Amino acid sequence: MSALGVWPPSVRPGEKGAQMSTTGLRLRTPPPDITHARASIVLPRPSRAEAPRAQHATAPVVVYAARTRLTYSEQLWFPRVESRMFFCVVAGSGAVRVNGTELELHPKVIVGMPWGHRVAYLPSRRDPLVINSAHLIVRHRLDHDLELCVPHRPDEPLAGVEWRSDAPLGVPDEPFLTDAEERPGLAMLLDYIAHTWTGGHATPTIALHLGALLVSELNRGASSRQPHEDPSLPPRLRRAMAWARGHLYLSVTIEDLCSAADVSPSTLGRLFRQHLGASPLSWVHDLKMARAEELLVESMFTIRQVSRQVGFADPHYFARWFSKRHHMAPSEWRRLQGKT
Image: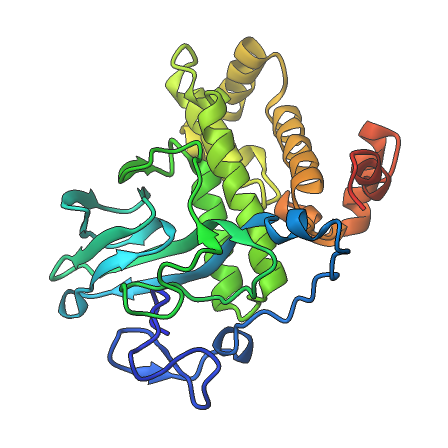
Protein backbone atom coordinates (compact mmCIF):
# COMPACT_ATOMS: atom_id res chain seq x y z
CA MET A 1 0.00 0.00 0.00
CA SER A 2 1.44 3.42 -0.88
CA ALA A 3 1.58 6.37 1.45
CA LEU A 4 -1.64 7.56 -0.15
CA GLY A 5 -3.40 4.27 0.51
CA VAL A 6 -2.86 2.47 -2.79
CA TRP A 7 -2.00 -1.22 -3.05
CA PRO A 8 0.66 -1.87 -5.73
CA PRO A 9 -0.70 -3.98 -8.62
CA SER A 10 1.32 -7.02 -7.55
CA VAL A 11 0.35 -6.89 -3.86
CA ARG A 12 -3.11 -7.09 -2.33
CA PRO A 13 -4.29 -6.78 1.28
CA GLY A 14 -3.77 -9.88 3.36
CA GLU A 15 -1.31 -11.53 0.96
CA LYS A 16 1.88 -12.94 2.41
CA GLY A 17 4.69 -10.42 2.14
CA ALA A 18 2.45 -7.41 1.53
CA GLN A 19 4.40 -4.20 2.08
CA MET A 20 3.65 -0.51 2.30
CA SER A 21 5.28 1.84 -0.19
CA THR A 22 6.07 5.36 0.98
CA THR A 23 6.99 6.64 -2.45
CA GLY A 24 5.41 4.29 -4.97
CA LEU A 25 8.88 2.85 -5.64
CA ARG A 26 10.56 1.83 -2.38
CA LEU A 27 8.83 -0.70 -0.14
CA ARG A 28 9.10 -1.28 3.58
CA THR A 29 7.19 -3.50 6.00
CA PRO A 30 4.30 -1.66 7.70
CA PRO A 31 2.79 -2.29 11.13
CA PRO A 32 0.98 -5.68 11.03
CA ASP A 33 -2.45 -4.27 11.78
CA ILE A 34 -2.25 -2.02 8.71
CA THR A 35 -0.96 -4.71 6.34
CA HIS A 36 -3.61 -7.20 7.39
CA ALA A 37 -6.34 -4.62 7.65
CA ARG A 38 -9.38 -6.75 6.93
CA ALA A 39 -11.81 -6.23 9.78
CA SER A 40 -12.16 -8.76 12.55
CA ILE A 41 -15.28 -7.04 13.85
CA VAL A 42 -18.10 -9.56 14.31
CA LEU A 43 -21.55 -8.03 14.46
CA PRO A 44 -24.39 -9.89 16.19
CA ARG A 45 -26.38 -11.91 13.68
CA PRO A 46 -29.82 -10.25 13.46
CA SER A 47 -33.04 -12.14 13.89
CA ARG A 48 -35.06 -12.91 10.78
CA ALA A 49 -37.40 -9.99 11.53
CA GLU A 50 -34.51 -7.56 12.08
CA ALA A 51 -32.37 -8.73 9.15
CA PRO A 52 -33.53 -6.26 6.46
CA ARG A 53 -32.90 -3.25 8.68
CA ALA A 54 -29.56 -4.54 9.98
CA GLN A 55 -28.28 -5.29 6.49
CA HIS A 56 -28.62 -1.61 5.57
CA ALA A 57 -27.06 -0.11 8.71
CA THR A 58 -24.15 2.14 7.71
CA ALA A 59 -21.47 4.18 9.43
CA PRO A 60 -18.72 6.56 8.32
CA VAL A 61 -15.20 5.11 8.40
CA VAL A 62 -11.70 6.42 7.76
CA VAL A 63 -10.20 3.71 5.56
CA TYR A 64 -6.73 5.16 5.24
CA ALA A 65 -4.66 8.06 6.59
CA ALA A 66 -1.01 9.08 6.63
CA ARG A 67 1.56 11.80 6.99
CA THR A 68 3.11 11.73 3.52
CA ARG A 69 6.17 13.38 1.97
CA LEU A 70 5.85 14.01 -1.78
CA THR A 71 8.82 15.10 -3.90
CA TYR A 72 9.05 16.49 -7.40
CA SER A 73 10.43 13.19 -8.76
CA GLU A 74 7.48 11.28 -7.28
CA GLN A 75 4.55 13.12 -8.86
CA LEU A 76 1.51 10.88 -8.53
CA TRP A 77 -1.65 10.67 -10.63
CA PHE A 78 -4.76 8.59 -9.99
CA PRO A 79 -7.76 8.34 -12.37
CA ARG A 80 -10.54 7.60 -9.85
CA VAL A 81 -10.29 7.59 -6.05
CA GLU A 82 -13.39 6.18 -4.38
CA SER A 83 -13.37 8.13 -1.14
CA ARG A 84 -13.78 11.63 0.18
CA MET A 85 -10.16 12.68 0.66
CA PHE A 86 -9.04 15.55 2.88
CA PHE A 87 -5.51 16.76 3.51
CA CYS A 88 -3.72 19.59 5.28
CA VAL A 89 -0.32 20.83 4.12
CA VAL A 90 2.23 20.63 6.94
CA ALA A 91 5.23 21.88 4.95
CA GLY A 92 6.38 22.52 1.41
CA SER A 93 4.67 23.94 -1.64
CA GLY A 94 3.30 22.97 -5.02
CA ALA A 95 -0.14 22.27 -6.40
CA VAL A 96 -2.77 19.59 -6.69
CA ARG A 97 -5.00 19.11 -9.75
CA VAL A 98 -8.43 17.71 -8.83
CA ASN A 99 -10.95 16.93 -11.59
CA GLY A 100 -9.12 19.43 -13.81
CA THR A 101 -9.02 22.23 -11.22
CA GLU A 102 -5.53 23.20 -10.05
CA LEU A 103 -5.19 24.38 -6.44
CA GLU A 104 -2.06 26.06 -5.10
CA LEU A 105 -0.56 24.50 -1.97
CA HIS A 106 1.42 26.00 0.89
CA PRO A 107 1.57 25.31 4.65
CA LYS A 108 -1.78 25.28 6.49
CA VAL A 109 -3.85 24.89 3.31
CA ILE A 110 -6.62 22.29 3.61
CA VAL A 111 -7.99 20.59 0.49
CA GLY A 112 -11.18 18.56 0.20
CA MET A 113 -11.83 16.22 -2.73
CA PRO A 114 -15.18 14.68 -3.74
CA TRP A 115 -16.04 11.02 -4.15
CA GLY A 116 -14.58 9.50 -7.32
CA HIS A 117 -12.09 12.31 -7.84
CA ARG A 118 -9.27 12.35 -10.39
CA VAL A 119 -6.11 13.77 -8.84
CA ALA A 120 -2.50 14.66 -9.66
CA TYR A 121 -0.04 15.78 -6.97
CA LEU A 122 2.47 18.38 -8.19
CA PRO A 123 5.11 19.13 -5.52
CA SER A 124 7.53 21.96 -6.24
CA ARG A 125 11.01 21.05 -7.43
CA ARG A 126 12.86 22.47 -4.39
CA ASP A 127 10.26 22.30 -1.62
CA PRO A 128 8.74 18.80 -1.12
CA LEU A 129 5.18 18.60 0.17
CA VAL A 130 4.36 17.09 3.55
CA ILE A 131 0.65 16.47 4.10
CA ASN A 132 -1.66 14.95 6.69
CA SER A 133 -4.36 13.09 4.78
CA ALA A 134 -7.44 10.99 5.47
CA HIS A 135 -9.72 8.96 3.18
CA LEU A 136 -13.35 8.89 4.33
CA ILE A 137 -16.09 6.48 3.28
CA VAL A 138 -19.22 8.35 4.34
CA ARG A 139 -21.47 5.28 4.27
CA HIS A 140 -20.04 1.82 4.81
CA ARG A 141 -22.55 -0.97 5.28
CA LEU A 142 -21.88 -2.78 8.53
CA ASP A 143 -22.85 -6.20 7.17
CA HIS A 144 -19.62 -6.18 5.13
CA ASP A 145 -16.01 -6.44 6.28
CA LEU A 146 -14.16 -3.19 6.85
CA GLU A 147 -11.04 -3.25 4.66
CA LEU A 148 -8.66 -0.40 5.39
CA CYS A 149 -7.59 0.49 1.86
CA VAL A 150 -8.80 2.73 -0.97
CA PRO A 151 -9.27 1.93 -4.68
CA HIS A 152 -7.49 4.56 -6.79
CA ARG A 153 -8.31 2.98 -10.16
CA PRO A 154 -11.48 1.41 -11.57
CA ASP A 155 -9.86 -2.03 -11.91
CA GLU A 156 -8.68 -2.26 -8.28
CA PRO A 157 -10.36 -4.35 -5.56
CA LEU A 158 -13.33 -2.60 -3.86
CA ALA A 159 -13.87 -0.23 -6.81
CA GLY A 160 -17.58 0.23 -7.37
CA VAL A 161 -18.74 -2.07 -4.55
CA GLU A 162 -22.27 -1.41 -3.38
CA TRP A 163 -21.49 -1.39 0.34
CA ARG A 164 -19.29 1.73 0.11
CA SER A 165 -20.97 4.96 -0.91
CA ASP A 166 -20.97 8.74 -0.60
CA ALA A 167 -23.54 10.96 1.13
CA PRO A 168 -24.03 14.73 1.57
CA LEU A 169 -21.76 16.44 4.10
CA GLY A 170 -21.44 19.97 5.39
CA VAL A 171 -18.73 20.71 2.80
CA PRO A 172 -18.93 21.18 -0.99
CA ASP A 173 -19.42 18.14 -3.23
CA GLU A 174 -16.61 19.47 -5.43
CA PRO A 175 -12.93 20.26 -4.86
CA PHE A 176 -12.58 23.00 -2.23
CA LEU A 177 -9.83 24.91 -0.49
CA THR A 178 -9.69 26.29 3.04
CA ASP A 179 -6.93 26.65 5.63
CA ALA A 180 -6.01 25.91 9.24
CA GLU A 181 -6.89 29.43 10.36
CA GLU A 182 -10.43 29.11 9.05
CA ARG A 183 -10.84 25.48 10.12
CA PRO A 184 -8.42 24.85 13.03
CA GLY A 185 -10.51 21.96 14.34
CA LEU A 186 -10.30 20.17 10.99
CA ALA A 187 -6.54 20.75 10.74
CA MET A 188 -6.03 19.41 14.25
CA LEU A 189 -8.21 16.36 13.57
CA LEU A 190 -6.37 15.50 10.34
CA ASP A 191 -3.10 15.69 12.26
CA TYR A 192 -4.48 13.41 14.96
CA ILE A 193 -5.86 10.90 12.43
CA ALA A 194 -2.56 10.81 10.50
CA HIS A 195 -0.54 10.26 13.69
CA THR A 196 -2.92 7.54 14.85
CA TRP A 197 -2.52 5.72 11.56
CA THR A 198 1.22 6.07 11.11
CA GLY A 199 1.75 5.11 14.75
CA GLY A 200 0.40 1.65 13.97
CA HIS A 201 -2.84 2.09 15.92
CA ALA A 202 -5.24 1.68 12.99
CA THR A 203 -7.84 -1.04 13.56
CA PRO A 204 -11.37 -1.33 12.14
CA THR A 205 -12.82 -0.15 15.46
CA ILE A 206 -10.55 2.89 15.59
CA ALA A 207 -11.31 3.58 11.91
CA LEU A 208 -15.04 3.76 12.73
CA HIS A 209 -14.41 6.11 15.65
CA LEU A 210 -12.27 8.38 13.47
CA GLY A 211 -14.91 8.36 10.74
CA ALA A 212 -17.55 9.57 13.19
CA LEU A 213 -15.25 12.33 14.46
CA LEU A 214 -14.35 13.49 10.96
CA VAL A 215 -17.97 13.64 9.80
CA SER A 216 -18.91 15.53 12.96
CA GLU A 217 -16.14 18.07 12.40
CA LEU A 218 -17.01 18.54 8.72
CA ASN A 219 -20.69 19.07 9.49
CA ARG A 220 -20.08 21.21 12.54
CA GLY A 221 -17.95 23.63 10.56
CA ALA A 222 -20.78 24.15 8.06
CA SER A 223 -23.62 24.53 10.54
CA SER A 224 -22.60 27.92 11.92
CA ARG A 225 -19.78 30.41 12.00
CA GLN A 226 -17.18 29.65 14.64
CA PRO A 227 -16.67 32.40 17.27
CA HIS A 228 -13.17 33.22 16.02
CA GLU A 229 -14.62 33.82 12.53
CA ASP A 230 -16.81 36.73 13.70
CA PRO A 231 -15.53 39.74 11.70
CA SER A 232 -16.81 42.15 14.37
CA LEU A 233 -14.13 40.95 16.82
CA PRO A 234 -10.63 42.50 16.84
CA PRO A 235 -8.21 40.53 14.62
CA ARG A 236 -5.75 39.91 17.48
CA LEU A 237 -8.51 38.45 19.64
CA ARG A 238 -9.65 36.22 16.78
CA ARG A 239 -6.10 34.94 16.32
CA ALA A 240 -5.88 33.99 19.99
CA MET A 241 -9.26 32.27 19.82
CA ALA A 242 -8.38 30.37 16.65
CA TRP A 243 -5.07 29.22 18.14
CA ALA A 244 -6.81 27.97 21.28
CA ARG A 245 -9.44 26.11 19.28
CA GLY A 246 -6.74 24.39 17.24
CA HIS A 247 -4.66 23.41 20.29
CA LEU A 248 -7.22 22.09 22.77
CA TYR A 249 -5.06 18.98 23.19
CA LEU A 250 -2.43 21.14 24.93
CA SER A 251 -2.36 22.69 28.38
CA VAL A 252 -2.98 26.19 27.06
CA THR A 253 -1.28 29.06 28.92
CA ILE A 254 -1.58 32.84 28.88
CA GLU A 255 1.85 32.95 27.26
CA ASP A 256 0.60 30.75 24.41
CA LEU A 257 -2.36 33.02 23.74
CA CYS A 258 -0.25 36.19 23.95
CA SER A 259 2.21 34.73 21.45
CA ALA A 260 -0.59 33.79 19.05
CA ALA A 261 -2.18 37.25 19.24
CA ASP A 262 1.11 39.17 19.56
CA VAL A 263 -0.15 41.18 22.55
CA SER A 264 0.78 41.62 26.20
CA PRO A 265 -1.02 39.69 28.98
CA SER A 266 -2.85 42.83 30.10
CA THR A 267 -4.07 43.59 26.56
CA LEU A 268 -5.12 39.97 26.09
CA GLY A 269 -7.15 40.02 29.31
CA ARG A 270 -8.80 43.30 28.33
CA LEU A 271 -9.76 41.98 24.88
CA PHE A 272 -11.32 38.80 26.29
CA ARG A 273 -13.23 40.57 29.07
CA GLN A 274 -14.44 43.37 26.82
CA HIS A 275 -15.64 41.23 23.91
CA LEU A 276 -16.30 37.79 25.41
CA GLY A 277 -17.12 38.60 29.04
CA ALA A 278 -14.60 36.13 30.45
CA SER A 279 -10.92 35.85 31.27
CA PRO A 280 -8.75 34.13 28.63
CA LEU A 281 -8.25 30.89 30.57
CA SER A 282 -11.88 30.75 31.67
CA TRP A 283 -12.92 31.01 28.02
CA VAL A 284 -10.44 28.28 27.05
CA HIS A 285 -11.75 26.01 29.83
CA ASP A 286 -15.31 26.50 28.55
CA LEU A 287 -14.09 25.60 25.06
CA LYS A 288 -12.39 22.46 26.38
CA MET A 289 -15.55 21.48 28.26
CA ALA A 290 -17.67 21.88 25.10
CA ARG A 291 -15.22 19.72 23.15
CA ALA A 292 -15.12 17.08 25.88
CA GLU A 293 -18.93 16.92 25.84
CA GLU A 294 -18.91 16.47 22.06
CA LEU A 295 -16.39 13.65 22.26
CA LEU A 296 -18.29 11.89 25.04
CA VAL A 297 -21.50 11.99 22.99
CA GLU A 298 -20.22 11.53 19.43
CA SER A 299 -17.32 9.10 19.86
CA MET A 300 -16.54 5.86 21.63
CA PHE A 301 -13.24 7.14 23.02
CA THR A 302 -12.42 6.11 26.56
CA ILE A 303 -12.41 8.73 29.31
CA ARG A 304 -8.60 8.67 29.19
CA GLN A 305 -8.62 9.34 25.44
CA VAL A 306 -11.15 12.17 25.80
CA SER A 307 -9.05 13.74 28.56
CA ARG A 308 -5.97 13.76 26.33
CA GLN A 309 -7.92 15.31 23.46
CA VAL A 310 -8.71 18.32 25.65
CA GLY A 311 -5.29 18.74 27.19
CA PHE A 312 -5.41 16.69 30.40
CA ALA A 313 -2.57 14.22 30.84
CA ASP A 314 -4.17 12.87 34.03
CA PRO A 315 -7.66 11.37 33.43
CA HIS A 316 -8.41 11.52 37.15
CA TYR A 317 -7.81 15.28 37.20
CA PHE A 318 -10.00 15.58 34.09
CA ALA A 319 -12.77 13.62 35.82
CA ARG A 320 -12.59 15.91 38.88
CA TRP A 321 -12.66 19.00 36.65
CA PHE A 322 -15.62 17.62 34.69
CA SER A 323 -17.49 16.61 37.86
CA LYS A 324 -17.04 20.06 39.36
CA ARG A 325 -18.94 21.55 36.43
CA HIS A 326 -21.56 18.84 35.88
CA HIS A 327 -21.83 17.42 39.42
CA MET A 328 -21.32 13.92 38.02
CA ALA A 329 -18.53 11.81 36.57
CA PRO A 330 -17.89 11.86 32.78
CA SER A 331 -18.96 8.23 32.50
CA GLU A 332 -22.27 8.95 34.23
CA TRP A 333 -22.85 12.05 32.09
CA ARG A 334 -22.17 9.97 28.96
CA ARG A 335 -24.63 7.30 30.13
CA LEU A 336 -27.35 9.91 30.63
CA GLN A 337 -26.73 11.18 27.11
CA GLY A 338 -27.55 7.74 25.77
CA LYS A 339 -24.02 6.25 25.54
CA THR A 340 -23.21 2.87 27.00
